[in-house]
Image 1: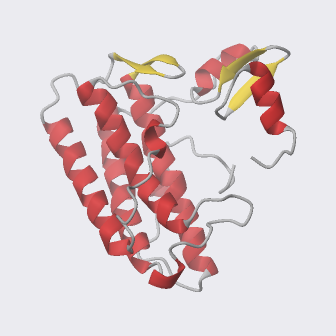
Image 2: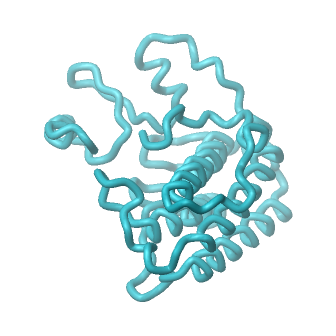
Length: 219
């Protein structure tokens, strides 16, 4: 995103999505860190994913926090950029943080391939313009997650899902979706702080424990 020659390097590989780790003409998508570890010659990452039931609790807790944070955003600033060097508004980021859950469910329930931009589908024009509307969308996503989990027979999430970075265990995609939403929650906390607003119910280190989050807020 920030490297002037980065796009050209990606296109030379025939890749249009990040993160990617490349060595010469060979590359691997960075969505599965175990794949990355194998690609660079390591014996795994050493990370042990949390059980699915714990991930579910953490994800719903994160989504509830996101609802609170987006409701705190000043209405007149929803279309401002989250950070200066990326063209993504607060409104679109907040919507995306919930869309991650909807995208997972579309793949897990309906068998839709988790494609490159699957979690990045923006809201239709003229929709989800306010914090309350986006929080309401989040309520729908939370309800769908809970209903899906309640009716799930195999809660080990061991079956494979078709994604743009290969067939992946559902457990791995579920974990990635959980920390993906959590990372955006951390970013919205940062935005509120920049506006001089104390976040309503900060996520704690315990809330995020066990999730393989990036060290920095904006990677």
